[in-house]
Length: 115
Image (tube, rainbow, N blue to C red; front, side, top):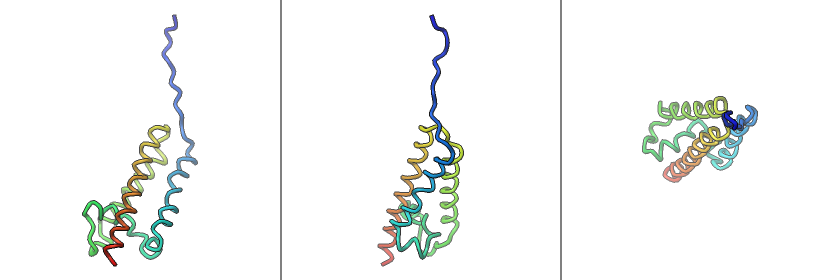
């Protein structure tokens, strides 16, 4: 009889690879958002705020934009630095990617309404 506890082998992602996964989507997002990404890059979070109904043209550089950027930076930092286990990392990373997709959709909607 073996009374030893069963060992779980956990798979960790190296820090360089985690950072690469976080940085990789941004050039793709800039490419998809071209030409808007060139002349108003700081307004990128306006897309997710537009979908939520929290952004208006007069709020161009309001606290909401800075709060959204802060949320992105916190999520990216948390994902890249703190989430070492593969399952946890890709769960938080998928949330990050979904936010980027919703943000792109909101930016497209915002640009269509501006025309």
